[in-house]
Amino acid sequence: MEIIEFIKMHGLGNDFVIIDRRSKNIEISKKLINTLSDRKSGAGCDQLITIDASTTNDHDVSIQIYNPNGDRAEACGNGTRCIAKLLFDENNKEEIKIKSDAGILLAKKIDYKNISVNLGKLSHNWKDIPTTIKVDTLNVPIKIDGFSSGIAVNIGNPHIIFFGANIENVDLSSIGPIIENDKLFKNKINIGIVKIINENKIKMRVWERGVGITLACGSGACAAVYAGTLKKLLKNNVEVKLDRGSLFISIVNNEAIMVGPAEISFQGKIEIE
Image (cartoon, rainbow, N blue to C red; front, top):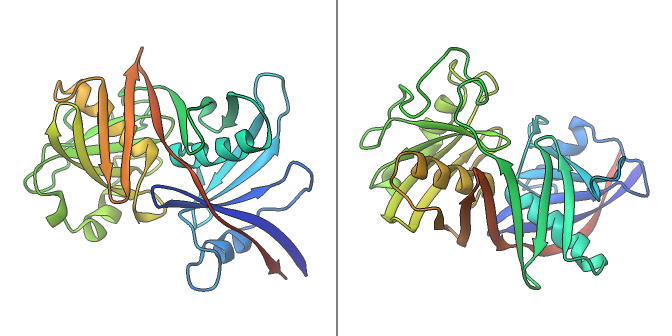
């Protein structure tokens, strides 16, 4: 029997179980991920994230991100902000470099609750999504009734964005898994449906790959704004309204910078056989 300590955190309801492995080696098995992610018998989360000690001088810590089904996720904007908050709370730094599968991400402390994260270079090249065949990523031939054709982008992880008016009426639980697993997407894909309020404000709902419907998605918010700028529908600074609040996204030099809150829910322990 092993007792594992964890921290439960969230960014606008997008929630995470975080395991700090900097001082203790803990094996992250599929059983552990499934147990902790379960909302009935575990802590419950959209993703499990580990913190590991840095291996080189170009970053402060490294992270690994796991979906509840055990799959790895390359990037997670809200999760990265949560990790950054923990690190800012334990030291006096104003900036933190966090290494993920998507690269090294720069986080800055705005105030006690709000964190800025630069999620890095953006792309809509079909090879970067990646898609299984060459496709016009600004007009992906996948349709949702009443919405634009999909816009596929990569922001460390793959997203497809649809713009339309009635996002509340879309049965995302039905179409989400179909689009996520479409044969066009080599590594599956995240889905965002977006209503444009004005050129500086949008509202969105998200289906996360390997997770399902989530209350918020930081990389998805960045993907939506990037897609909107590519289609000349949005400016470079946009408020993204989600179920529990807003994220503020800036597209600067083809990079996405996100500002939003990160909060600790509770700390706990779990026994694993």
